[in-house]
Image 1 (tube, one colour):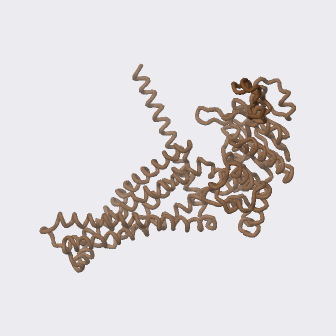
Image 2: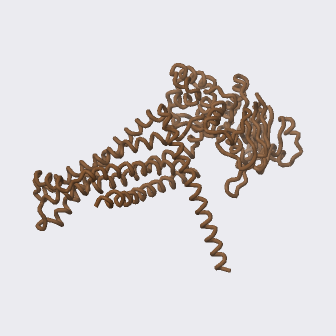
Image 3: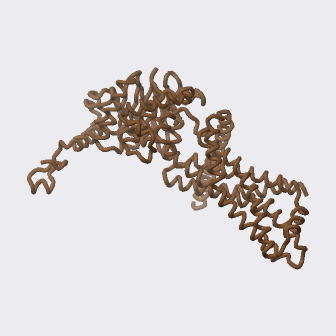
Length: 273
Length: 266
Protein backbone atom coordinates (compact mmCIF):
# COMPACT_ATOMS: atom_id res chain seq x y z
CA UNK A 1 0.00 0.00 0.00
CA UNK A 2 1.56 3.27 -1.04
CA UNK A 3 1.00 6.55 -2.81
CA UNK A 4 1.80 6.74 -6.49
CA UNK A 5 1.23 9.43 -9.12
CA UNK A 6 1.76 8.33 -12.72
CA UNK A 7 2.22 10.93 -15.44
CA UNK A 8 -0.14 13.42 -13.75
CA UNK A 9 -0.86 16.69 -15.55
CA UNK A 10 -2.98 19.59 -14.36
CA UNK A 11 -3.58 23.04 -15.74
CA UNK A 12 -5.71 25.95 -14.48
CA UNK A 13 -6.86 27.87 -17.58
CA UNK A 14 -3.53 28.76 -19.27
CA UNK A 15 -1.32 27.93 -16.30
CA UNK A 16 0.26 24.45 -16.44
CA UNK A 17 0.78 23.46 -12.80
CA UNK A 18 1.77 19.80 -13.16
CA UNK A 19 3.19 18.40 -16.38
CA UNK A 20 3.54 14.62 -16.50
CA UNK A 21 4.55 14.27 -12.86
CA UNK A 22 5.63 10.85 -11.53
CA UNK A 23 5.92 10.51 -7.78
CA UNK A 24 5.96 7.61 -5.35
CA UNK A 25 5.89 7.20 -1.58
CA UNK A 26 6.51 3.77 -0.09
CA UNK A 27 4.84 2.44 3.07
CA UNK A 28 6.16 3.94 6.29
CA UNK A 29 8.30 6.42 4.38
CA UNK A 30 8.40 10.20 4.77
CA UNK A 31 8.94 12.08 1.53
CA UNK A 32 9.46 15.84 1.44
CA UNK A 33 8.24 17.65 -1.61
CA UNK A 34 10.50 20.65 -2.06
CA UNK A 35 10.24 23.52 -4.47
CA UNK A 36 9.86 27.25 -4.81
CA UNK A 37 6.45 28.84 -4.14
CA UNK A 38 3.89 28.40 -6.93
CA UNK A 39 5.36 25.26 -8.46
CA UNK A 40 2.34 23.06 -7.74
CA UNK A 41 3.41 21.30 -4.53
CA UNK A 42 0.09 21.87 -2.76
CA UNK A 43 -1.81 21.00 -5.95
CA UNK A 44 0.03 17.68 -6.08
CA UNK A 45 -0.85 17.03 -2.44
CA UNK A 46 -4.52 17.80 -3.10
CA UNK A 47 -4.50 15.24 -5.93
CA UNK A 48 -3.53 12.55 -3.42
CA UNK A 49 -6.59 13.20 -1.25
CA UNK A 50 -8.91 13.75 -4.22
CA UNK A 51 -9.59 17.45 -3.61
CA UNK A 52 -8.36 18.11 -7.16
CA UNK A 53 -8.73 15.76 -10.13
CA UNK A 54 -5.94 15.50 -12.68
CA UNK A 55 -6.50 16.45 -16.33
CA UNK A 56 -4.59 13.27 -17.24
CA UNK A 57 -2.61 10.59 -15.46
CA UNK A 58 -3.28 8.29 -12.53
CA UNK A 59 -3.27 8.84 -8.77
CA UNK A 60 -3.06 5.64 -6.70
CA UNK A 61 -3.45 5.53 -2.92
CA UNK A 62 -3.80 2.25 -0.99
CA UNK A 63 -4.27 0.42 -4.31
CA UNK A 64 -7.20 2.66 -5.29
CA UNK A 65 -7.32 5.04 -8.25
CA UNK A 66 -8.39 8.22 -6.45
CA UNK A 67 -9.95 10.20 -9.37
CA UNK A 68 -12.20 7.24 -10.25
CA UNK A 69 -13.57 6.69 -6.74
CA UNK A 70 -17.24 7.26 -5.98
CA UNK A 71 -18.43 9.50 -3.16
CA UNK A 72 -18.55 6.81 -0.47
CA UNK A 73 -15.28 5.12 -1.46
CA UNK A 74 -13.49 8.47 -1.55
CA UNK A 75 -14.89 9.39 1.85
CA UNK A 76 -13.70 6.01 3.20
CA UNK A 77 -10.23 6.54 1.75
CA UNK A 78 -10.06 10.07 3.16
CA UNK A 79 -10.79 8.70 6.62
CA UNK A 80 -7.41 6.92 6.36
CA UNK A 81 -5.58 10.11 5.35
CA UNK A 82 -4.77 13.01 7.65
CA UNK A 83 -4.25 16.35 5.90
CA UNK A 84 -2.52 19.26 7.61
CA UNK A 85 -3.47 22.49 5.87
CA UNK A 86 -1.10 25.37 5.31
CA UNK A 87 -2.88 27.79 7.66
CA UNK A 88 -4.50 25.17 9.83
CA UNK A 89 -7.94 25.56 8.16
CA UNK A 90 -9.52 25.30 11.59
CA UNK A 91 -13.28 25.78 11.76
CA UNK A 92 -13.53 29.21 13.37
CA UNK A 93 -17.10 28.69 14.61
CA UNK A 94 -15.98 25.70 16.74
CA UNK A 95 -13.63 25.49 19.69
CA UNK A 96 -10.40 23.49 19.49
CA UNK A 97 -12.02 20.42 21.10
CA UNK A 98 -14.75 20.26 18.43
CA UNK A 99 -12.20 20.94 15.69
CA UNK A 100 -10.08 17.97 16.74
CA UNK A 101 -13.15 15.83 17.40
CA UNK A 102 -14.20 16.31 13.76
CA UNK A 103 -10.96 14.54 12.86
CA UNK A 104 -12.33 11.33 14.39
CA UNK A 105 -13.63 9.88 11.17
CA UNK A 106 -15.19 6.69 12.55
CA UNK A 107 -18.84 7.67 13.10
CA UNK A 108 -19.37 5.25 16.01
CA UNK A 109 -16.32 6.61 17.84
CA UNK A 110 -17.29 10.20 16.94
CA UNK A 111 -20.66 9.65 18.67
CA UNK A 112 -18.95 8.28 21.82
CA UNK A 113 -18.30 11.44 23.84
CA UNK A 114 -16.04 9.78 26.44
CA UNK A 115 -13.80 8.34 23.74
CA UNK A 116 -13.71 11.73 22.00
CA UNK A 117 -12.64 13.54 25.20
CA UNK A 118 -9.83 11.03 25.76
CA UNK A 119 -8.72 11.05 22.13
CA UNK A 120 -8.70 14.86 21.88
CA UNK A 121 -6.62 15.07 25.09
CA UNK A 122 -4.23 12.45 23.69
CA UNK A 123 -3.87 14.32 20.39
CA UNK A 124 -3.24 17.61 22.20
CA UNK A 125 -0.57 15.90 24.29
CA UNK A 126 1.08 14.46 21.18
CA UNK A 127 1.54 17.97 19.77
CA UNK A 128 2.71 19.40 23.12
CA UNK A 129 -0.42 21.42 23.80
CA UNK A 130 -2.15 21.79 27.13
CA UNK A 131 -5.64 20.32 27.62
CA UNK A 132 -6.98 23.83 28.37
CA UNK A 133 -6.38 24.78 24.73
CA UNK A 134 -9.39 22.57 23.91
CA UNK A 135 -11.76 25.25 25.22
CA UNK A 136 -10.24 28.04 23.12
CA UNK A 137 -11.40 29.20 19.71
CA UNK A 138 -9.00 29.31 16.72
CA UNK A 139 -8.98 33.13 16.80
CA UNK A 140 -7.45 32.96 20.29
CA UNK A 141 -4.46 30.85 19.15
CA UNK A 142 -1.05 31.88 17.85
CA UNK A 143 0.15 30.78 14.38
CA UNK A 144 2.26 27.95 15.80
CA UNK A 145 -0.58 26.72 18.01
CA UNK A 146 -3.00 26.75 15.07
CA UNK A 147 -0.58 24.60 13.08
CA UNK A 148 -0.27 22.17 16.00
CA UNK A 149 -4.06 21.99 16.43
CA UNK A 150 -4.27 21.33 12.67
CA UNK A 151 -1.85 18.43 13.13
CA UNK A 152 -3.89 17.18 16.11
CA UNK A 153 -7.03 17.16 13.98
CA UNK A 154 -5.21 15.31 11.20
CA UNK A 155 -4.02 12.52 13.55
CA UNK A 156 -7.25 12.25 15.59
CA UNK A 157 -8.69 9.63 13.22
CA UNK A 158 -5.52 7.48 13.49
CA UNK A 159 -4.69 7.79 9.79
CA UNK A 160 -2.39 5.56 7.75
CA UNK A 161 -1.16 8.52 5.70
CA UNK A 162 -0.31 12.06 6.77
CA UNK A 163 -0.05 14.86 4.25
CA UNK A 164 1.49 18.11 5.48
CA UNK A 165 1.02 21.26 3.39
CA UNK A 166 3.75 23.75 4.35
CA UNK A 167 3.66 22.91 8.08
CA UNK A 168 6.35 25.49 8.92
CA UNK A 169 5.54 28.34 6.53
CA UNK A 170 5.04 31.69 8.20
CA UNK A 171 6.64 30.53 11.45
CA UNK A 172 9.79 31.88 13.09
CA UNK A 173 12.79 29.49 13.10
CA UNK A 174 12.18 28.39 16.70
CA UNK A 175 8.54 27.45 16.05
CA UNK A 176 9.49 25.90 12.70
CA UNK A 177 11.95 23.67 14.56
CA UNK A 178 9.22 22.71 17.04
CA UNK A 179 6.93 21.66 14.17
CA UNK A 180 9.74 19.79 12.39
CA UNK A 181 10.58 17.81 15.51
CA UNK A 182 6.87 17.13 15.95
CA UNK A 183 6.62 15.72 12.41
CA UNK A 184 9.71 13.61 13.10
CA UNK A 185 8.33 12.37 16.44
CA UNK A 186 4.88 11.55 15.02
CA UNK A 187 6.58 9.55 12.28
CA UNK A 188 8.44 7.53 14.91
CA UNK A 189 5.52 7.20 17.36
CA UNK A 190 2.61 6.41 15.06
CA UNK A 191 4.55 5.14 12.04
CA UNK A 192 2.47 6.76 9.31
CA UNK A 193 3.41 7.19 5.66
CA UNK A 194 3.95 10.94 5.20
CA UNK A 195 4.32 13.52 2.48
CA UNK A 196 5.61 16.91 3.62
CA UNK A 197 5.24 19.82 1.22
CA UNK A 198 7.70 22.55 2.08
CA UNK A 199 10.14 25.08 0.70
CA UNK A 200 12.32 24.85 3.82
CA UNK A 201 15.35 22.74 2.79
CA UNK A 202 16.68 22.40 6.33
CA UNK A 203 13.34 21.08 7.64
CA UNK A 204 12.98 18.73 4.68
CA UNK A 205 16.45 17.24 5.23
CA UNK A 206 15.62 16.76 8.88
CA UNK A 207 12.26 14.97 8.58
CA UNK A 208 12.35 13.13 5.24
CA UNK A 209 13.68 9.74 4.19
CA UNK A 210 13.61 10.92 0.58
CA UNK A 211 13.24 14.30 -1.06
CA UNK A 212 11.58 15.24 -4.34
CA UNK A 213 12.23 18.63 -5.91
CA UNK A 214 9.43 20.12 -7.98
CA UNK A 215 10.34 22.81 -10.47
CA UNK A 216 8.50 24.22 -13.48
CA UNK A 217 5.59 21.75 -13.16
CA UNK A 218 7.91 18.69 -13.20
CA UNK A 219 9.68 16.56 -10.59
CA UNK A 220 13.26 17.65 -11.17
CA UNK A 221 15.05 15.31 -8.74
CA UNK A 222 14.19 12.54 -6.27
CA UNK A 223 16.49 10.88 -3.76
CA UNK A 224 17.87 10.82 -0.26
CA UNK A 225 19.29 14.02 1.24
CA UNK A 226 22.80 12.93 0.26
CA UNK A 227 21.74 12.20 -3.31
CA UNK A 228 20.00 15.56 -3.61
CA UNK A 229 23.03 17.42 -2.24
CA UNK A 230 25.27 15.50 -4.66
CA UNK A 231 23.01 16.31 -7.63
CA UNK A 232 24.75 18.12 -10.49
CA UNK A 233 21.47 19.59 -11.77
CA UNK A 234 21.97 23.40 -11.76
CA UNK A 235 18.33 24.07 -10.78
CA UNK A 236 18.60 21.71 -7.79
CA UNK A 237 21.91 23.27 -6.75
CA UNK A 238 20.55 26.81 -7.16
CA UNK A 239 17.53 26.00 -4.99
CA UNK A 240 19.58 24.28 -2.29
CA UNK A 241 22.22 27.01 -2.15
CA UNK A 242 19.67 29.80 -1.83
CA UNK A 243 17.74 28.04 0.92
CA UNK A 244 20.73 26.73 2.85
CA UNK A 245 22.18 30.25 2.83
CA UNK A 246 18.95 31.46 4.42
CA UNK A 247 19.19 28.67 6.98
CA UNK A 248 22.71 29.71 7.91
CA UNK A 249 21.62 33.33 8.22
CA UNK A 250 18.72 32.26 10.45
CA UNK A 251 21.08 30.18 12.58
CA UNK A 252 23.18 33.32 13.08
CA UNK A 253 26.33 31.72 11.72
CA UNK A 254 26.97 34.13 8.87
CA UNK A 255 28.56 37.50 9.50
CA UNK A 256 28.02 40.51 7.32
CA UNK A 257 30.17 43.52 6.69
CA UNK A 258 27.62 46.10 7.79
CA UNK A 259 28.32 49.82 8.44
CA UNK A 260 27.72 49.24 12.18
CA UNK A 261 30.13 46.29 12.15
CA UNK A 262 32.79 48.29 10.30
CA UNK A 263 32.52 51.04 12.92
CA UNK A 264 32.48 48.80 16.00
CA UNK A 265 34.67 46.03 14.64
CA UNK A 266 32.45 42.97 14.42
CA UNK A 267 28.69 42.50 14.79
CA UNK A 268 27.13 39.52 13.09
CA UNK A 269 23.57 39.38 11.83
CA UNK A 270 22.16 38.32 15.20
CA UNK A 271 23.68 41.35 16.85
CA UNK A 272 26.08 39.31 18.99
CA UNK A 273 29.74 40.25 19.04
CA UNK B 1 -9.30 43.77 -40.56
CA UNK B 2 -11.00 45.59 -37.71
CA UNK B 3 -14.29 43.86 -38.52
CA UNK B 4 -12.57 40.47 -38.48
CA UNK B 5 -10.96 41.17 -35.10
CA UNK B 6 -14.31 42.30 -33.71
CA UNK B 7 -16.00 39.16 -35.06
CA UNK B 8 -13.31 36.94 -33.53
CA UNK B 9 -13.54 38.78 -30.21
CA UNK B 10 -17.30 38.35 -30.21
CA UNK B 11 -16.91 34.65 -30.98
CA UNK B 12 -14.39 34.29 -28.15
CA UNK B 13 -16.67 36.19 -25.77
CA UNK B 14 -19.69 34.06 -26.67
CA UNK B 15 -17.58 30.90 -26.37
CA UNK B 16 -16.27 31.82 -22.94
CA UNK B 17 -19.71 32.87 -21.74
CA UNK B 18 -21.22 29.58 -22.98
CA UNK B 19 -18.49 27.54 -21.28
CA UNK B 20 -18.94 29.45 -18.03
CA UNK B 21 -22.72 29.04 -18.14
CA UNK B 22 -22.43 25.30 -18.83
CA UNK B 23 -19.94 24.96 -15.97
CA UNK B 24 -22.29 26.81 -13.58
CA UNK B 25 -25.26 24.72 -14.72
CA UNK B 26 -23.28 21.51 -14.13
CA UNK B 27 -22.02 22.56 -10.71
CA UNK B 28 -25.47 23.79 -9.66
CA UNK B 29 -27.03 20.50 -10.74
CA UNK B 30 -24.43 18.46 -8.83
CA UNK B 31 -25.04 20.62 -5.76
CA UNK B 32 -28.79 19.90 -5.96
CA UNK B 33 -28.08 16.17 -6.30
CA UNK B 34 -25.73 16.31 -3.29
CA UNK B 35 -28.39 18.19 -1.31
CA UNK B 36 -30.97 15.51 -2.11
CA UNK B 37 -28.50 12.75 -1.15
CA UNK B 38 -27.54 14.57 2.02
CA UNK B 39 -31.14 14.52 3.30
CA UNK B 40 -30.57 10.91 4.39
CA UNK B 41 -27.83 12.04 6.81
CA UNK B 42 -30.31 13.76 9.12
CA UNK B 43 -28.18 13.18 12.21
CA UNK B 44 -25.62 15.56 10.71
CA UNK B 45 -27.85 18.34 9.40
CA UNK B 46 -30.71 18.31 11.90
CA UNK B 47 -28.94 19.85 14.95
CA UNK B 48 -27.17 22.39 12.72
CA UNK B 49 -30.46 23.24 10.97
CA UNK B 50 -32.08 24.02 14.34
CA UNK B 51 -29.26 26.47 15.19
CA UNK B 52 -29.53 28.07 11.76
CA UNK B 53 -33.34 28.31 11.95
CA UNK B 54 -33.08 30.12 15.27
CA UNK B 55 -30.38 32.46 13.96
CA UNK B 56 -32.29 33.19 10.75
CA UNK B 57 -35.82 33.39 12.16
CA UNK B 58 -35.24 35.17 15.44
CA UNK B 59 -32.44 37.29 14.01
CA UNK B 60 -34.59 38.57 11.14
CA UNK B 61 -37.77 39.09 13.15
CA UNK B 62 -37.11 42.75 13.97
CA UNK B 63 -36.20 43.94 10.49
CA UNK B 64 -38.99 41.94 8.82
CA UNK B 65 -41.74 43.27 11.13
CA UNK B 66 -40.30 46.81 10.91
CA UNK B 67 -40.45 46.79 7.12
CA UNK B 68 -43.90 45.15 7.09
CA UNK B 69 -45.17 47.75 9.58
CA UNK B 70 -43.99 50.65 7.43
CA UNK B 71 -45.42 48.99 4.30
CA UNK B 72 -48.81 48.59 6.03
CA UNK B 73 -48.79 52.21 7.22
CA UNK B 74 -47.87 53.62 3.80
CA UNK B 75 -50.48 51.46 2.02
CA UNK B 76 -53.08 52.71 4.43
CA UNK B 77 -52.12 56.38 3.94
CA UNK B 78 -52.04 56.02 0.14
CA UNK B 79 -55.42 54.26 0.14
CA UNK B 80 -56.80 57.22 2.10
CA UNK B 81 -55.22 59.73 -0.30
CA UNK B 82 -56.55 57.96 -3.43
CA UNK B 83 -60.02 56.83 -2.40
CA UNK B 84 -61.39 59.20 0.27
CA UNK B 85 -64.67 60.69 -0.96
CA UNK B 86 -64.83 58.44 -3.99
CA UNK B 87 -65.25 54.93 -2.54
CA UNK B 88 -66.72 53.64 0.73
CA UNK B 89 -64.13 53.60 3.55
CA UNK B 90 -64.33 49.80 4.05
CA UNK B 91 -62.54 49.42 0.67
CA UNK B 92 -59.36 50.58 2.46
CA UNK B 93 -59.59 47.43 4.64
CA UNK B 94 -59.58 45.28 1.50
CA UNK B 95 -56.73 47.22 -0.11
CA UNK B 96 -54.50 47.06 2.96
CA UNK B 97 -55.02 43.35 3.68
CA UNK B 98 -54.87 42.25 0.05
CA UNK B 99 -51.76 44.35 -0.68
CA UNK B 100 -49.97 42.87 2.31
CA UNK B 101 -50.98 39.25 1.67
CA UNK B 102 -50.59 39.24 -2.11
CA UNK B 103 -47.54 41.38 -2.61
CA UNK B 104 -45.92 43.47 0.10
CA UNK B 105 -45.57 40.80 2.81
CA UNK B 106 -43.88 38.11 0.69
CA UNK B 107 -41.91 40.35 -1.69
CA UNK B 108 -40.56 42.84 0.83
CA UNK B 109 -39.64 40.01 3.21
CA UNK B 110 -38.01 38.14 0.31
CA UNK B 111 -35.97 41.19 -0.73
CA UNK B 112 -34.93 42.06 2.82
CA UNK B 113 -33.83 38.48 3.44
CA UNK B 114 -32.06 38.30 0.06
CA UNK B 115 -29.86 41.07 1.45
CA UNK B 116 -29.59 39.94 5.03
CA UNK B 117 -29.42 36.16 4.66
CA UNK B 118 -27.96 36.13 1.14
CA UNK B 119 -24.99 38.28 2.15
CA UNK B 120 -24.46 36.31 5.34
CA UNK B 121 -24.53 32.88 3.71
CA UNK B 122 -22.34 33.91 0.77
CA UNK B 123 -19.77 35.63 3.01
CA UNK B 124 -19.68 32.77 5.54
CA UNK B 125 -19.28 30.05 2.94
CA UNK B 126 -16.95 32.15 0.80
CA UNK B 127 -14.64 32.79 3.76
CA UNK B 128 -14.71 29.09 4.60
CA UNK B 129 -13.79 28.28 1.01
CA UNK B 130 -10.84 30.70 0.78
CA UNK B 131 -9.48 29.68 4.19
CA UNK B 132 -9.66 26.01 3.09
CA UNK B 133 -12.19 25.10 5.81
CA UNK B 134 -14.44 23.49 3.18
CA UNK B 135 -11.47 21.52 1.80
CA UNK B 136 -10.65 20.52 5.39
CA UNK B 137 -14.17 19.13 5.87
CA UNK B 138 -13.84 17.15 2.65
CA UNK B 139 -10.39 15.90 3.64
CA UNK B 140 -11.94 14.50 6.83
CA UNK B 141 -14.32 12.44 4.69
CA UNK B 142 -17.28 14.65 5.62
CA UNK B 143 -19.67 16.18 3.11
CA UNK B 144 -19.61 20.00 3.17
CA UNK B 145 -23.02 19.98 1.51
CA UNK B 146 -24.56 18.06 4.43
CA UNK B 147 -22.60 19.93 7.11
CA UNK B 148 -22.88 23.47 5.75
CA UNK B 149 -25.39 23.91 2.91
CA UNK B 150 -28.28 21.67 3.86
CA UNK B 151 -28.78 23.13 7.38
CA UNK B 152 -28.76 26.68 5.99
CA UNK B 153 -31.17 25.95 3.16
CA UNK B 154 -33.59 23.95 5.30
CA UNK B 155 -33.49 26.67 7.97
CA UNK B 156 -34.56 29.20 5.34
CA UNK B 157 -37.31 27.00 3.97
CA UNK B 158 -38.74 26.57 7.48
CA UNK B 159 -38.23 30.08 8.87
CA UNK B 160 -38.92 32.35 5.88
CA UNK B 161 -42.58 31.30 5.26
CA UNK B 162 -43.22 31.86 8.99
CA UNK B 163 -41.61 35.31 8.75
CA UNK B 164 -43.74 36.11 5.69
CA UNK B 165 -46.94 35.18 7.55
CA UNK B 166 -45.84 37.32 10.49
CA UNK B 167 -45.06 40.18 8.11
CA UNK B 168 -48.51 39.83 6.54
CA UNK B 169 -50.24 39.93 9.93
CA UNK B 170 -48.14 42.77 11.35
CA UNK B 171 -48.47 44.84 8.18
CA UNK B 172 -52.27 44.49 8.23
CA UNK B 173 -52.37 45.41 11.95
CA UNK B 174 -50.26 48.56 11.47
CA UNK B 175 -52.28 49.39 8.33
CA UNK B 176 -55.49 49.17 10.33
CA UNK B 177 -54.12 51.33 13.16
CA UNK B 178 -52.95 53.93 10.65
CA UNK B 179 -56.30 53.88 8.79
CA UNK B 180 -58.17 54.23 12.09
CA UNK B 181 -56.14 57.25 13.14
CA UNK B 182 -55.85 59.01 9.78
CA UNK B 183 -59.08 58.02 8.00
CA UNK B 184 -61.27 57.31 11.03
CA UNK B 185 -61.92 53.79 9.74
CA UNK B 186 -63.73 51.66 12.34
CA UNK B 187 -62.73 48.08 13.08
CA UNK B 188 -66.08 46.81 11.77
CA UNK B 189 -65.57 48.60 8.42
CA UNK B 190 -61.96 47.40 8.19
CA UNK B 191 -62.95 43.81 8.92
CA UNK B 192 -65.85 43.96 6.49
CA UNK B 193 -63.57 45.27 3.69
CA UNK B 194 -60.86 42.74 4.42
CA UNK B 195 -63.34 39.83 4.45
CA UNK B 196 -65.20 41.12 1.38
CA UNK B 197 -62.12 41.07 -0.87
CA UNK B 198 -60.36 38.04 0.67
CA UNK B 199 -60.25 34.71 -1.16
CA UNK B 200 -58.56 31.57 0.26
CA UNK B 201 -56.49 31.49 -2.93
CA UNK B 202 -54.79 34.73 -1.79
CA UNK B 203 -53.31 33.04 1.26
CA UNK B 204 -52.31 29.97 -0.74
CA UNK B 205 -50.60 32.29 -3.26
CA UNK B 206 -48.78 34.09 -0.44
CA UNK B 207 -47.56 30.80 1.08
CA UNK B 208 -46.42 29.42 -2.29
CA UNK B 209 -44.51 32.65 -2.94
CA UNK B 210 -42.89 32.55 0.48
CA UNK B 211 -41.57 29.00 -0.09
CA UNK B 212 -40.30 29.94 -3.56
CA UNK B 213 -38.55 33.05 -2.22
CA UNK B 214 -37.12 31.07 0.70
CA UNK B 215 -35.57 28.61 -1.73
CA UNK B 216 -34.17 31.43 -3.89
CA UNK B 217 -32.64 33.47 -1.05
CA UNK B 218 -30.94 30.42 0.47
CA UNK B 219 -29.95 28.15 -2.45
CA UNK B 220 -28.47 30.90 -4.67
CA UNK B 221 -26.22 32.54 -2.02
CA UNK B 222 -25.16 29.08 -0.78
CA UNK B 223 -24.15 28.09 -4.31
CA UNK B 224 -22.30 31.35 -4.97
CA UNK B 225 -20.55 31.36 -1.58
CA UNK B 226 -19.62 27.68 -1.87
CA UNK B 227 -17.92 28.31 -5.23
CA UNK B 228 -16.00 31.42 -4.16
CA UNK B 229 -12.48 31.84 -5.56
CA UNK B 230 -9.60 34.27 -5.23
CA UNK B 231 -9.30 35.31 -1.59
CA UNK B 232 -10.86 38.28 0.15
CA UNK B 233 -11.72 39.99 -3.14
CA UNK B 234 -13.56 36.83 -4.20
CA UNK B 235 -15.56 36.82 -0.96
CA UNK B 236 -16.62 40.44 -1.60
CA UNK B 237 -17.57 39.64 -5.18
CA UNK B 238 -19.51 36.54 -4.14
CA UNK B 239 -21.42 38.47 -1.48
CA UNK B 240 -22.46 41.18 -3.95
CA UNK B 241 -23.36 38.63 -6.62
CA UNK B 242 -25.37 36.59 -4.13
CA UNK B 243 -27.47 39.57 -3.00
CA UNK B 244 -28.09 40.79 -6.55
CA UNK B 245 -28.86 37.32 -7.93
CA UNK B 246 -31.17 36.42 -5.03
CA UNK B 247 -33.04 39.77 -5.26
CA UNK B 248 -33.51 39.54 -9.03
CA UNK B 249 -34.68 35.92 -8.69
CA UNK B 250 -37.23 36.97 -6.06
CA UNK B 251 -38.66 39.58 -8.46
CA UNK B 252 -38.66 37.14 -11.38
CA UNK B 253 -40.36 34.43 -9.32
CA UNK B 254 -42.91 37.02 -8.17
CA UNK B 255 -43.89 37.73 -11.77
CA UNK B 256 -43.91 34.07 -12.84
CA UNK B 257 -45.95 32.88 -9.84
CA UNK B 258 -48.43 35.74 -10.21
CA UNK B 259 -49.01 34.76 -13.82
CA UNK B 260 -49.22 31.05 -12.97
CA UNK B 261 -51.46 31.24 -9.91
CA UNK B 262 -53.50 34.45 -10.22
CA UNK B 263 -53.42 34.61 -14.03
CA UNK B 264 -55.19 31.26 -14.33
CA UNK B 265 -57.62 31.94 -11.47
CA UNK B 266 -59.31 34.93 -13.11
